[in-house]
Image (cartoon, rainbow, N blue to C red):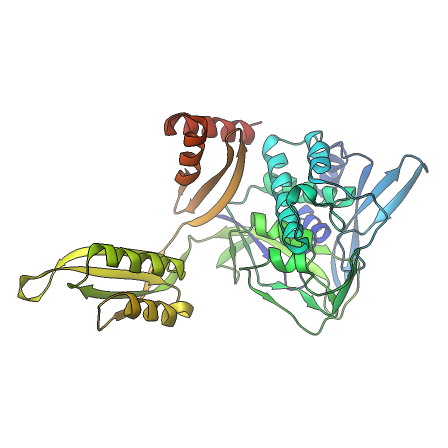
Length: 406
């Protein structure tokens, strides 16, 4: 399958991600011209070749044309330096108004806004305010819109089946922002990277910015080591600052095999529990992070009818799962087996509809692509709008199809 791998060993920022992806495009110069024709207000993209630690790559900068002063100012908004700037703060509604007029497909617009909504949710969490009251200090300016738009558009054009990223280097020390000096990773970045493998190191500075974290959160299917893949092309997106290591995001695209991994399977047989009590145990196992829990009716000794409880989990939470099994069931023994499984890559995206947000899960691999809309979301929308499930589902499918083919 067509696989895009992002090496974030020196973090991730919007300008570095867009520069790395630009090097994967068939004609980078022409694509830069395309970016400058998108009608992002007062924005001019510039791509230039630079060298970091002997490695040549692309440095993407955004220049903002000041209509009042008739000048062009260069911005390094999404860089590993001071977050403070003089732009007016922007609300989510301001962002939506700007994005609405950008000359890209509805699908790309939806991705741009989805990234910004992740940023808004992070800022809301950090500042303890509703999303409607959030003013973007570090990420609300035109240069950030440009970085996000460029990245979303190039991922759309490259159309990988799956996107995998390495663990993310966040840097160390502190970073200055509009609210003062904050530890690295900055609180909004830390919130966006929850559940993502990250690491620090000796390099002082902010290596992963909120915008970079939001783009990774939105697009990446899986974080981990590079899969076995036949490499077709690679690109280096360079940062502004020089460090002892090449300050870049490396993007590699090629063909990889369908995924497989290993999971721990825990099983036990039970013949002295009520279905209600066993149901509670299953609920607790899922809450603890089990991948799957299921039961099978079995015949036990002396022809007693019993139940086999089967739990699949990652090995790193095995001990916790075992504690729950022994605490919430009557079993006195659990069998363990390490088993290989073949899986489809999964990605969940949010679709904005007249009925509210509907989550869409796409599964890819082994020559198949499956799409499923979250049943609980469809059920809620149907109840709130006095419609049948089929009516809501068909309308959501139409909205999703129109956006993807605009």
